[in-house]
Length: 229
Length: 294
Image (cartoon, rainbow over all chains, first blue to last red; front, side, top):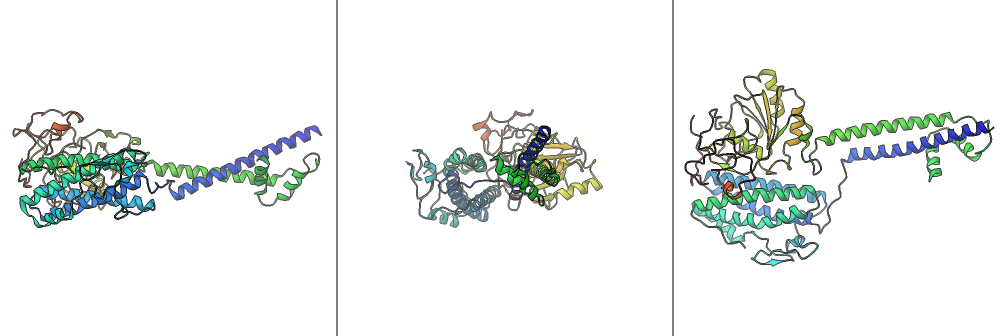
């Protein structure tokens, strides 16, 4: 009787272990199949995150560069500057679309609230100040981001030709690159997503090089950069 | 917890739930009760099935994700044997009249022409000026260079089929190449002997438009308006560049970045003489004339 009892007991333990294992394996396998179907999990950044603020504001900033570069590409007679303008136009349009893609996936508007100001995300979590677009410092929002050209400046670009056009384009685009640098640096340091930090860092590096080229091009034309805002 | 798990697991297989309930009710005694073979076999079947699914899913995920570029997997090409890596400073431009004394053949980074070679899956039948090809790498393209004496016929068609109409790809003969094939992406190169090598696909998957490895994410491959004509590209120059060539540290390049930020760039390999004109100023007019004839 005792031996029969113990054999039944060990059989029971075996069944229990097998059942437990089955439940665990089925759960794990199900989880993996879901992963396979979904292609990974990723939580979206919140509405007041650096990631969302950077993507929305940098889109606005980039899209103006696309406009200015398009004018230069169509109107300039200088093949080197036409190439530079085309490069800036297509690269920034592509990057702006990438950021729009992120915002779509994060279920956020792909542009910031019109009239609500910019760069609030750069004061997140403390008194970190940033340029107010007029040569001062602020921790709040600004109406115009540093480096942004006015409508008058862009309209003037549309009327000029020859060296005058090239010089104003270089001046406006150089100031635009310098203005965007601070935002890009903040994004590269503080964004939550690795791919956002990466793009911000690439913007810092490639635009610094382009800015240096534009300074050389201005000097060749005997012109000076505009004062920084 | 344990009993909950047990009843869930024990009830799952169809059929024998009746005998399982009976067995639970009479824990002691009832030696007549037969072993629940059906349930045991059912459980084993479930375990086997789950293990199979588990293994399949795991291998599929691992295989899929191995080449997917992400913030956690910024350079999948580290898993490919034979890839050479070097860090290059981006954005150093030269004019159409200048040349660069590259440190590699074919080069996969360094100063380059203002105009990039078109890289929209472009198959160049002729060898193209290297300084334009390197700019395409900066925009995220993969360049398939081959030795025209070694790669012909079927092998050439195999390579073409991987490039033609594929965005961010370009292909051209590179006379004097020391291996039959060289795949290049900015800062990365893999030299191969066979067009059927499976590493070709892995290299392309890992590095084409890789926003972590390429300096200018979103850089364009269309070349119209830049002065580069894909139907009549500036020709490859076989002769070594002269002492006035732009060096790998960017001395003589347009942006003058060598003077400002020198030091963080790879050392130049010989020919370190600065250009005779000195300074970082190309001609102001910068007309896109073809390079001086050899």
